[in-house]
Image 1 (tube, rainbow, N blue to C red):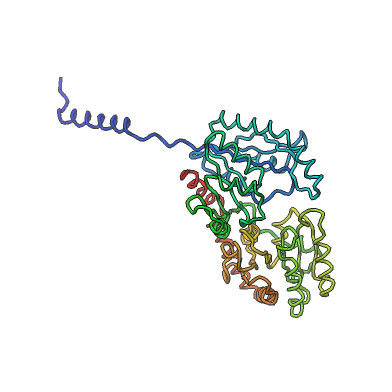
Image 2: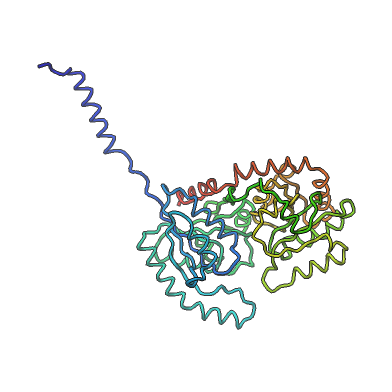
Length: 421
């Protein structure tokens, strides 16, 4: 019977002892953050805040985060747009919340009635409190919708957990006191651009708890290979006609009026140019579209401007477009800029707000100062007259979207904020 080498026995024992020691002293895998998103929106169309949060819920790394969401489900057979958007996200724990009707009502009596209808929401908030405790939620994440922010502030105070408010607009005193108070209590405030974050810092928010996370889009939803011929045919636009498109809610700050005024100048050199204005009046019931049509008639460009209303085929419209233009005042970010870039279309915007963080002047589009209609018209003329430049800008824009404005990056940025809490 041969004996084993003492040296080998010693070496094996040492390795086993070392492994056991490492096992005993190894740090356990970090616990997943348990995050609950709160969205009570019930009305169409979905806002940018819901789209952005839906992407976050889908792309947050499930090895680092356990993701829950509370939203308004709607009635049987009549789901809310928010429920439709969130219910298809894999691995999302979804629960119902009902805070009553949204109070976008103009009369004082309407607001009083709305508040009375909202009273039963107390029961829903109580159910949400039980949900938070049952699932040991650690972080609440909501948007700058005032009542959602207030609900999260109350839940955080009752449970001692952290809460985050995602701000999609520039800070201002026009915000409701309820929202401003909730933001002041939040453990972290996220702006969708450095521009939005800067407005929060100017208002006195702590640099430590104030962050900027650039928005993102689902790049795969924007197929730049789409053919716009069918859309042009349906709109009676010849193949060689220059097309400028603006997709946005129709109200003063989105810049549709400036585009129509610019068209009067562009028309002198390119008389067949078409401007497509896509969207509906905001708020509903206002008459901005009628005012814009009257202006186009007065300037003699009504035959150059087509009002298409609300559309679902935005990718196809952009495929039929040569230039995307939206000279929006103080745009916080501009998801539609990124969408146009994903479709390889050059973008025309203003050199202010969050637009310069999305659109690189001279590379993915052209920027100009607010109120400078002549410069706006010149930017349109330059791109109409230079197809090669349009193509180059489109290629660069698509590259930027694929490498920066994608949801994986946005989710990683938000996860770092969660970890800092």
